[in-house]
Image 1 (cartoon, rainbow, N blue to C red):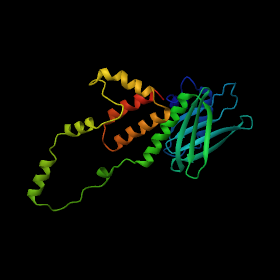
Image 2 (image 1 turned 30 degrees about the vertical axis):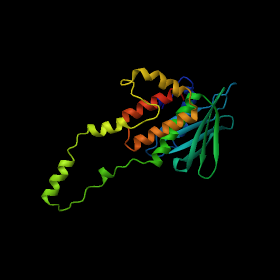
Image 3 (image 1 turned 90 degrees about the vertical axis):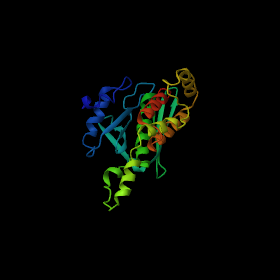
Length: 236
């Protein structure tokens, strides 16, 4: 099981704890359900029975040990029921909180900061997918066959011969707050990084959401979004 979850493990996690959780989740996962990330509590003192939180492509699962670790309680919430998610960082770790549409709020505290950030990023991506589903209508919906005069068809072909560079250039001239291509503006890279470092976590999250909306609306390219996302995550 661990071989399939190497991407989840990092220096702040105990492989044995992850193995124990995944072994108990094995019979709970639905078809086509994949684990995205697992975060485990790490309290200042010795954590004997830590709580865990698992995010998959279908739901959030809270894992709480019971009966001195002999059993485990699972409480899950579908992404459709999640209203929002938050991360609050402190000196001794971070708290990951999510609220449901029925006004329930759940918090898992004493999480390593990098684990809490990855939970938040995964949760935001899943919620964004629900709010802005990928439109595949151009692929699924076949064009209707309509008898069109030959002259009109020829005009349509002329319109479709625009070079794709124009669309790329349009995306490049869109004003994206806090971002400049470092190849085009190498002298401004340091200033941009200083600006991001001065922002709070909420402001960084807001910027990341804005960039995602620009990508979904086709105003920036995937490569540009990946660069923007990478820059912001460094300061989260």
